[in-house]
Length: 131
Image 1: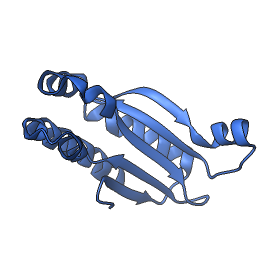
Image 2: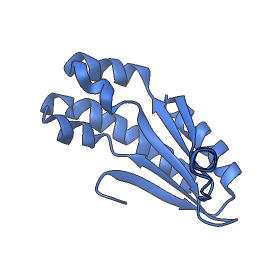
Image 3: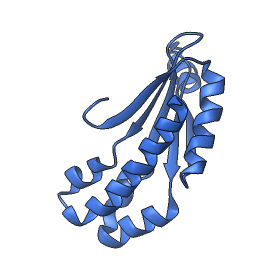
Image 4: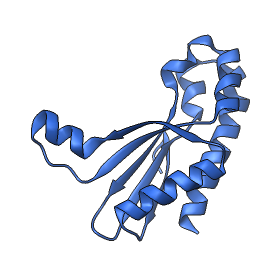
C-alpha cells in the first residue's frame, strides 16, 4: 500500500481482474463513470507499449453528493480512481486512491467522515477481490 492508495495483487488474468473489480465496486455502491484504457492511449498517442491497464473512475453518488455539500470544489478530486494493471499473464494489481487524500489536499476536516466511509467501501471492494 502506498501512502495515498489501497492495493491488492491478484493471481488472475487482467481481463478477469477488470471484470471482478467492476463487480466488487458495484457491490459497494460505486458506479464506473469513466474508463481510460492506458495501454491503448499510450499506443495511439505515443506509439509506446505499456502493460495492459485501465483507470476506472468510480463514484458512489451519495458520498459524492455529501462531499460536494462540504467542499464545493471537491469535484477536482472526484471520481475515485481505481487502476487495474497487468503484472504478467497471471498476476494483476488493483489499486484505489485513498479518499483521505481529499482531506489532506483540501485541509477541510469536515470531509473526514465522507472520506472514511468511502475508504471503508473501497477497502471492502479490495478485500472482496482478495478473498
